[in-house]
Length: 406
Image 1: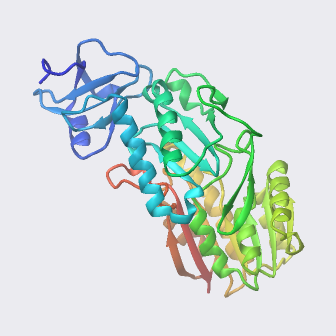
Image 2: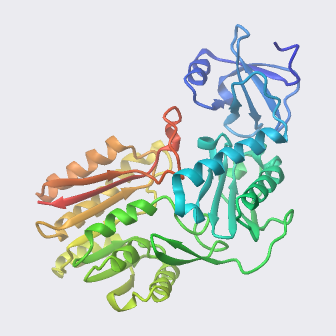
């Protein structure tokens, strides 16, 4: 096989072989045992067992801990531009099918879940905002961007530009520089912001300066679930960011909604989004640290019927899971204490490393300490435009729970 194929090859440890046969697409550098041929940064390499059996082929990254990201286990594949164009096509067809009317603002490519490792593409109406974190995909981004715009055009969607937000520190581990701004390889025009509609709510998305790609699309259906609880209630939305949960609740008929974020700029954008939707008369906004605010509200005997906790990831590695769990417990414990019996709590974690088992253990501990019982209403995950592959645990990260406090 090695003689017939045009690619260099690496042989791997038995541990890596087991992982790859189970369907996980990452090969760590420490698991490579030998190399045949000359590995090219960002190039294709075959992956073999120590007995010479072919396991698949992927893109090689010389500086990353993940040395090879498997693209395919089809031995007939030659990884021409057509291969990557097909992957884009499959991703778009999947979103158009599962997202329906929400195709206008959704994640079009979700990295490994779409067979395009390290690639994120969000659509905000007529703009695509991208993030590329792998060396091999950086080399092929012109193919990806062209395929996206051409295939969307064939679907009747005209894109006015591709805006790159490849700013993560992970790029340095791949030997890549930070890239931010309009992609110059395609036409682009207009301001670096746009207006989207999600669940009937309008948002101004500042994709040049907002966090990550400018707006968090993964909670769209969880916002809708929270809104169903909200009519007639006084709502406290913590870590509101652009105001998304708060706006959904206000639009659904909440008596009043207080939206809180530590960032003054986020609060300003949330306030502007409330005005955009004509909801400012039933909302107020506060720039505050939620860890300080919740104890103060408890002392003041503030009255809320529904508290929403949607914090940023408290941990991005296994090493800090225990300290993150303490942070999650603190805010959930305070919220449970603040709510009356019969009140409602929506709580989330967007950290892959804070798994469901850990998160639920934390919630049980917080409820025990707060001397309350949690009546489960709904348990949810990320929206299907962020698909979960069961053989790739890293694709599952968002946990969202709604409870009544009894």
